[in-house]
Amino acid sequence: MRLLFTINSGIEIGVVEGCSGKSSIKIMKTVELSAFGIEHLHVVERAEPTLKEQDVLVQIEAVSLNYLDLALIKGVYKPDLAFPAIPTSDGSGTVLQVGNAVTRWKPGDRVTVHFKQDWLSGPTTAETEARRVGVTLPGVLAQRVVLPEHGLVRTPDSLTAEEASTLPIAGLTAWSGLLDEGNLQIGQTLLVQGTGGVSLAALQLAKASGARVIATTSSDEKAQKLRTLGADHVINYRQTPNWEQSVLELTAGKGADITLDVAGTETFTKSMQAVKQNGFVGIVGFLSGTEAPMNLYIPVLKSLTLRGLSVGSRQAFEQYLQALTVMQIKPVIDRVFPIEQVQDAFRYFESGQHFGKVVIRL
Image 1 (cartoon, one colour):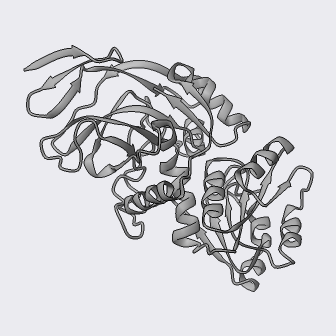
Image 2 (cartoon, rainbow, N blue to C red):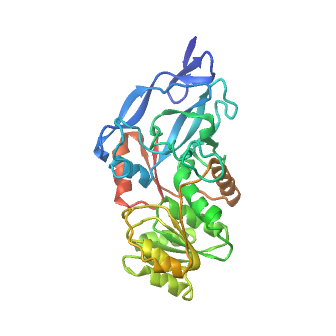
Image 3 (spheres, rainbow, N blue to C red):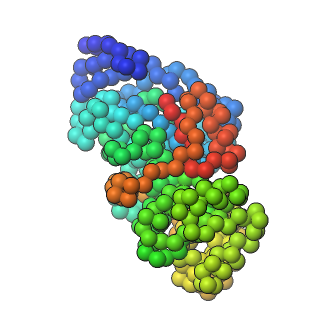
């Protein structure tokens, strides 16, 4: 039995026997990648995914872009990707329908996607790496997606869908690096690099936690925005190529307690030089490449902790969301594009002009 009617958004929906809640008709808009390259991203109409007993059908309202998405689209990250593919990992929306065995969610709940679907708590394992949204699983750049009930977290009332969509990779990585792994303390110094999602989320968390923040950026305009967000000192790395020396000068020769390295090849050695004895370097990204020549004397003589950061568990995500509510932190969004401008959104993201997150609204 299927009863159809129309809701305010103009989407025709209905009730399907055997499931709880409303069910959309079988056609939806999605973005598909037909070959490597931004020019091969296209909005198409496809059949809605099938709902199983423990699955949840989510109306995706917003997705945010990460460098991982861009690297995948360009063939840098996963050269064996099968086409066509639905890209992007981070999304937020509303539950439309749940399978008969679902107990965590009901229609109308506001939810955000968890990147590593099976990483529920504890340390990461090979098994928790197997099912990653937008990498080994279909992405969320679609009007409706089906995910297992355990692969979602509740969106705080304090956040819009656009804001929540920025958190699964960038925000949670910052939280894991600073609080779970780096053990950031009041009065310590954090070095953030650039103005992408991870760096700005880390800046906001650090300032709310009572830490001092030194930031690097490529322009005076972005430097002023960093100061407005609370950065105590800002270094323009184009004007000061040896920015690691400036960090030492700003810390009386000691160095920062923690840094999150987001660029890889061009910055990794500088990151190690910029932190103090027994300092922490969180390895986050590879914006400038994945190969990083390393002088082993630096981490050995300074007794550094070098830690690869790979997002976080669902439990950590839920703790992070609670902290954002208590700290009254709002994620920084640079621009919001409609789904029809998906190519423009990725080109803008690729240009590096953004300050904060780039979001696509569906």
